[in-house]
Amino acid sequence: MQKVLNLFDFKQKVDYKTEILAGLTVAMTMIPESLSFALVADFPPRVGLYGAFIMGIITAIFGGRPGLVSGGAGATVIVLIALMKTHGLEYVFGAVAMAGVIQIIVGLLKLGKFIRLVPQPVMYGFVNGLAVIIFTSQLKQFKILVNGQYEWLSGSPLFIMISLVALTIAIILLFPKITKAIPASLVAILVVFGIVLLFNIDTKQVVDIASISGSLPPFHIPQIPFTFETFKIILPYGLIMAAVGLTEGLLTLNLVDEITGTKGNSNRECLAQGTANIANGFFFGMGGCPMIAQTLVNLSSGSRARLSGIIAALTILVIILVGAPVIELVPMAALIGVMIMVAIGTFEWASFKAFTKMPKPDIFVMLVVTLITIFLHNLALAVLIGVIISALVFAWESAKRIRARKYVDEAGVKHYELYGPLFFGSTTAFAEKFDVQNDPNEVIIDFAESKITDMSAIDAVNKITERYAALGKKVHLKHLSADCVELLKNAAAIIDVNILEDPTYKVVPGKK
Image (cartoon, rainbow, N blue to C red):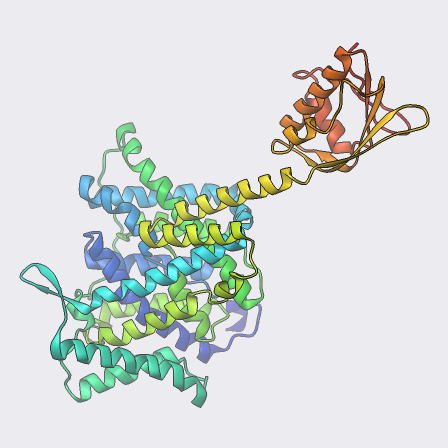
């Protein structure tokens, strides 16, 4: 058995009891969420469950790291709502498969590593925004459908729901003090389930969302015209879904890396997500990506291997096939309590302490990402804007760091010893360092503590040499690194820069 498991990256010793119980707990939290997301997008309920099973089983076995749980996530489903309304379910399946193809291309090109460029304030904002979304999404369960309109519960039904949620939370908080052998979330669900059945309490159950019984996911080629017009319709949705799925997935992978102190494989995760979404497109699933809430439930239940994800996916399939009548009776209050605790655990409370220590630009980035995530539910946009703002702040701060130490040696040569990077953001400050009119006929610019990094920097150097050359003065560039020299050589066809190798230093003479 262990040899078989090792084939699927089970290189560490597997605690089978913990993994199985964690998988069952994850399945219990994934079912109502997948159903809810499917109904929000007007998909048939089983499309949500099929999506959860297919994403879960494929990524659990072949994904980028153990412990990561994938399913029919709301972040990707939201992208498809407009397509569902305008063109119907068949086009949705086509877009899901298209997203999978794009994700596989990203994985094959090994572009997953670029997620490392996401700064920590963006991570804080992303996680905090998701925590708020997870929490607020539970509030809709306190509504019921009356005459075609959703209304808030009131009176005894509201009191019962709140009491059961509070009981669930209390069990999750207190049970670990008794034992950690069994996941507290699973115990809470079972206890509340038992109380409701024993005392015949009238409260909202899973069946009130939708029926979940069905068959194996059927093979289904999307019934759409295979034309360029169809391609133009589904491509934008596929691109956005792929971007959202990879962004949420790889950020979640990084989060799991931090929690477990291990390292996942981002490119492998891209390939697994892509394969799973292609399968969803051809097996009646709504697609998805890694789910941070369920992943945190999995980790908090003690899982550190792939087995829990496999168990969760298979549990969902078994429930679809034979266990629906029982699972449909599970009180929603128990699942709400579990998800509220997940939201509390997801939130980076340490970010509040960081307010007094983090630079103001980082605080601004964190707040922007959080607010975009909460109000627009667009994780890809939130992270993209956060990264752009962080990059601009970094460029601005780096631009201010370029300095120059100036002196004239005994031979009457003016020296400029530069400190800090020379790039597009610092070229203006660089040009202001030189006194071209009053400098002697020979000038040395020393790059021992600086570096030419881009085309803007090369252009700035060229303009300085031109200004000196216009007055008949000569400029030498000293201590250029090999890669800087290569940059200048590559730019020679565009910019009039000549490089003269010198045993002591690299020299670029000005024009005469």
